[in-house]
Image (cartoon, rainbow over all chains, first blue to last red; front, side, top):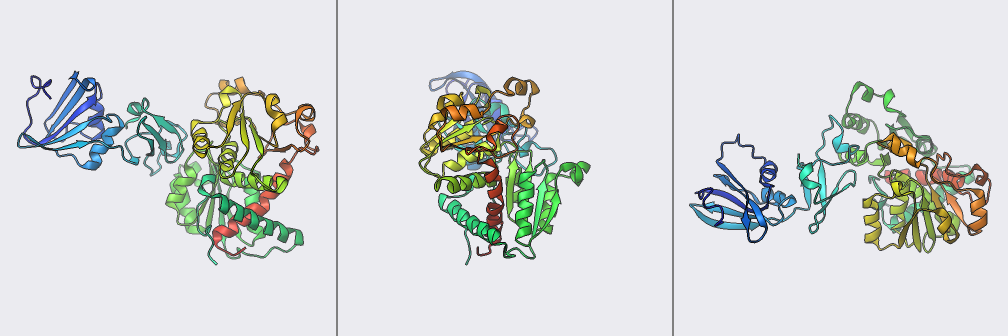
Length: 156
Length: 313
């Protein structure tokens, strides 16, 4: 994280999500359900140089440790992301994201006649992993396949 | 003796193995035998079967109703959304919960894909999918595959052509998916470019390792076919009426084409209703098997209801 040193200071405790594809930091926050209203100090660094990705985004969230189940959801849009759990300025744990077998409630089904799109029904959209590379998901209810390019536009 | 069907939901034809489908066909044979003999045992006495048709149907609804009644069950239900409290904006979920409280088996048809699976998640009683949007129509596929076994003695080793609206027809999709449970020699998917099968259907074919080819003209392949499965254009599922106008009348099976180019033993199946895609001159020919197919729906659906109820057939 040499690149962002000048932009954002180190955090004492919390989570640093690194190697997010450039331009997707805000989507990562949306997947994590972080709106800013929760009160955490959040730093978003976008479009910085990266040896691995060319350009990348970084998100730092102070005083919030991410759970494994939350981390894995990020794989939908940032499969190469690395999660650093920071305690007392030190990285105490590094996690790689792994796409879960089932993704519930994060993506809207693109098919307008899928039962999950029907109004006033107590149902949550759910996708099953078909393959991770390339990313391919299938709606559990209507069978519609969703590829990598479509995913960012479907995040609820 | 408990059966592997007892209490099961029937959502997709892919929920069933080849062995299970074959045991269903054996049970259907027994039902057909009872019907020929003129005495059908009342295997479903005291059972209530709900027919929840949120979308129009003739054959499927009537054949399920008849199948249930011939086995001694009582049927309740409705044949359109307009006649239910859905018209008062009741949710699908609440309607299903009510039917679950009233009945032992729920048969559901809905224009939304995934409605039957959602119903099965809500209901304790088994749910049978009688068609969910463009997606699945498993009991039609069971009828179709059963018809093929009656006509040819087997589903295996035959060359199939599936002609028509392969994009929106749930019957066509379910028939294609059902064939992957067997060993067809080859499947030709015959459709105008706009009506090709959906990617998820082709994904199942690829994974099953079934030999298939997408072609546009029936004329090019009809001489190879043992079974020609025809479906109408599903006008009601086109999001854009202009798109429908572009493909309307784009394919038709004529007696002349069949007599000129097809095998003598070719059989034509159609889930019905047919509109203009099959020449009525074929109806009384040796090639037409669609009315026989409609007839076989009764013993097949009787067998399915009996097995789902857990009675010995």
